[in-house]
Amino acid sequence: MLMNNFLVGQIPYQIRGLPNLENLLLWNNSSTNILPQSLGFSEKLVRVDVYSNLLDSPIPPNLCKYYKFVDISSNNFTGTIT
Image (cartoon, rainbow, N blue to C red; front, side, top):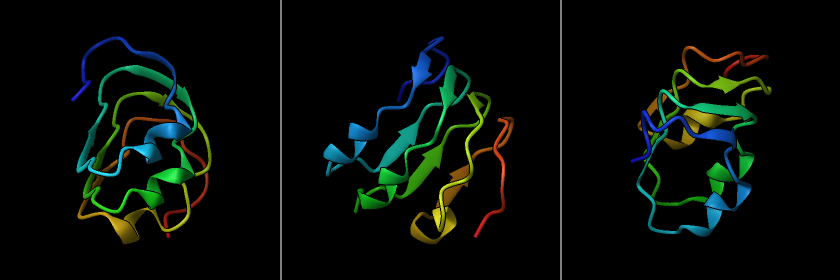
């Protein structure tokens, strides 16, 4: 849980190297650029909560297919949710 920490920069794609990660809670930071498509490879991940950041990439394909809870609001994403 790394919310409200004024984190800046990109969310690292190496996050897929955390096989036991269940909840990605990064809301209310200043993370920029992309939400890594590699999140789809985290088998135990059930919650992706990155609202209120500065993310501005296309939404990763099938993002909602893999997780029980997804909140990507208050960002600048482009594209559609599939």
